[in-house]
Length: 366
Image 1 (cartoon, helix red, strand yellow):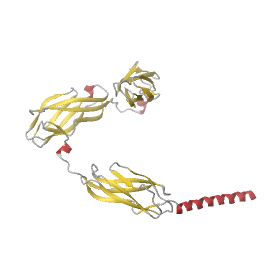
Image 2 (cartoon, rainbow, N blue to C red):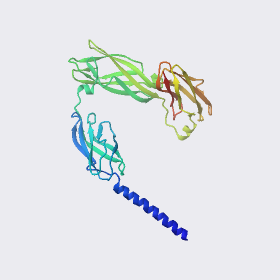
Image 3 (cartoon, rainbow, N blue to C red):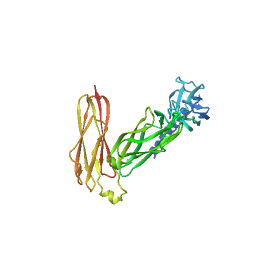
Image 4 (tube, helix red, strand yellow):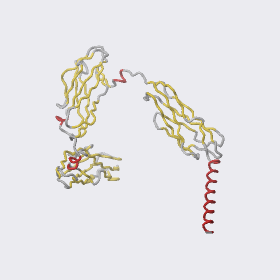
């Protein structure tokens, strides 16, 4: 019994010691007190340039205070702070600069303050509302080709499926002093069609152009890039070249859980391989192994690399249930150097993973 009382007394003494040390540290350690932790800039004009606010703080502790890092969550916000130690009772400041350019609308930005204070991290906030700049014709239609300005020289359809056509409408502006007419002539693949609404544009006016992409006729999978040429009745620069982008994935109709259970399923042992440091001129080869974990036949539709420096070998394209396969990827390092990441996409009839990326990495020494 005496030992139990002794143990209890020992624990109580140790606990009181830690509590005393904690309270002493709180009272005598580093403390930072901000006079204000947020600031509202109110209404700003986007083109008026950078604005600044000064956050002042006091070292209310009994030891020197040092700001170790001040970080902003947005590139539009830049903090400046005292790098020297702040003595007890002295004041310091953090200047926060905000650039409203390309930041229209209401905003709230945070600044994280790290220091040797016992309170740890502090969060400062700035807020306000940016009145957007008035857009010029050049802002809205930045691409000029002859007398016509386009919103962009690129028409990006994004990711589409292989079963149906898709439309995308772009706008064009006539910056000339004459009416410009678009010709019916269009140079492109037969899977791209163009319609003007209307096919003429009065001076300082705009028209819309609808581009239709037919992936069924395209009959391919993966990232596609195509060039199209439009023509006008202008005497000079009548030829307008645009680029069309689309990523085509195989279409699968809605499936029940039972159908998905039976469907082909491709499973790789690994999908990333790092060759490490190698010498320029080496031919590097790695084999990715996979297995059809589904009940129906797995069909490899195609493989596509993002670099001509890689070669892909696949012995067969169809695999029964539980059948295994190999995809050998060879990287030719001639003509490339430094850190390299190359990707090969494997397209299959697996409805849950119809496009699978295999990645190889290497650091190529000169």
